[in-house]
Image 1 (cartoon, helix red, strand yellow):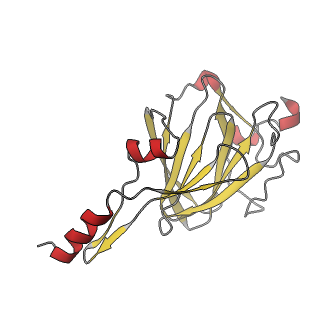
Image 2 (cartoon, rainbow, N blue to C red; image 1 turned 90 degrees about the horizontal axis):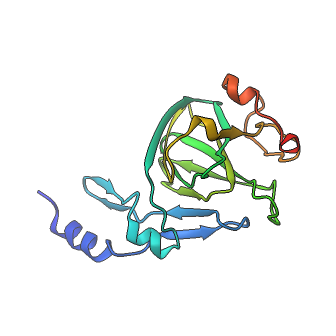
Image 3 (tube, rainbow, N blue to C red; image 1 turned 60 degrees about the vertical axis):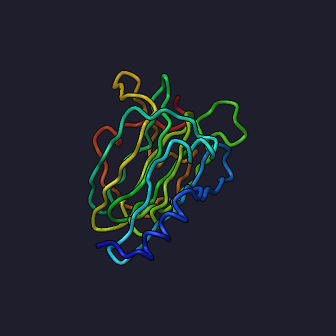
Length: 192
């Protein structure tokens, strides 16, 4: 039976808004959900359309992806050309170093990147709008990453940049990443 005190606390807090941190690169947000612990464990809303609208995110997400990767796996830097793809990324097991690179031509921060550690412990989410390449590196023995996308995957519009592109110069937390054949062939920012 649920503890009455826990029920009252949950009802008082369920309407609270999400905490959002704006990054130095316009459009990127680090989102922290309200987590409601009780004697059974914890609960949080990983997505609520009304709460995200209050943050200025009115995206209709149409695809959810889920990956599992071993330590030092580096996936990225990926993006969809048209229509582009907004993402809401979270790590539900383990820990990752999540990176977004501004690839918006004409942007004052073109080629700049921002990274955030996402983990099952901190429950943070990273909102990445259209116009960014995305990648992550696994910090724990393995990690599960789940992310929502604003457009369905289209292989013909798939593109990427080299994880070690000197123009971008991401400070990845590994010197010997495990990469896919595709990611080994991605061009540098200067080559596109």
